[in-house]
Length: 133
Image 1 (cartoon, helix red, strand yellow):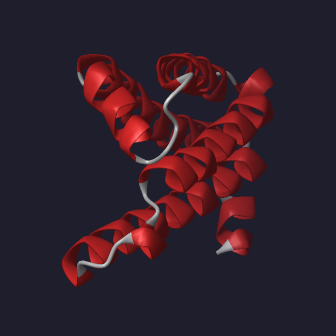
Image 2 (cartoon, helix red, strand yellow):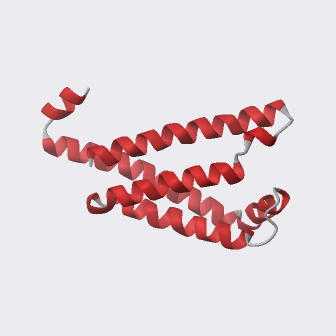
């Protein structure tokens, strides 16, 4: 695979990596809009999870960080900073919102384990796009 990328037309490689970064950025920007719409519900969830103070600040700061990192990820000059920001946001939100180990209901446990696995794969894709430029 790497050999094919090395022999690929540079303009094609640039276009493909941009399209990959755009798709990832779109996913996170969509998620940010969803977090804004569901802001109160996310704060309530954190309160039920034991974070009774500062939940609104945490959700707001996370939404802003995700948005800024998504925009940084689009720019080739700041792709690494944006990618690291997106990965840190993803891992942090998984620790807060997808804590599969606390669920007794096996169906909920599986759903949240699946989210964690998907986010781990997404983080791997972000690393690949950071390396590709």
